[in-house]
Image (tube, rainbow, N blue to C red; front, side):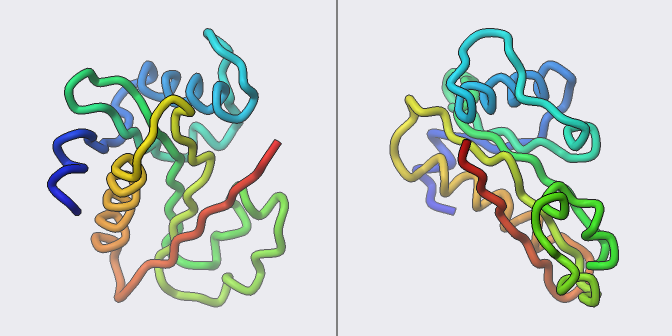
Length: 143
């Protein structure tokens, strides 16, 4: 990952309920255009890890996404995406899989470094998955 991205932003997983709520507020702002204490939440929030990208200097949350890991494709039907898409073609795969969802970047944030930071962290997650490789997928919904 480029040094510039590391200096401006940091990526980490949520460590508390407050971290998850901050991600849900950012998602609500990005997906529904609603400011304040409203939360974009569903039952998958409890099943996923939440990746947060923050400004290094201020700690301000600028990007987030949910990460759900599956040991093999056999479990893919429990994913968020399976509600909307036929994922049966992935069930026979024996490699670990990640579903990356509810990905959003604060509309006031510009520049490619925030995206580089988030994708760099996802790449590290894939590299540490057990097995020869990991498949990851983004699902993008527009309201």
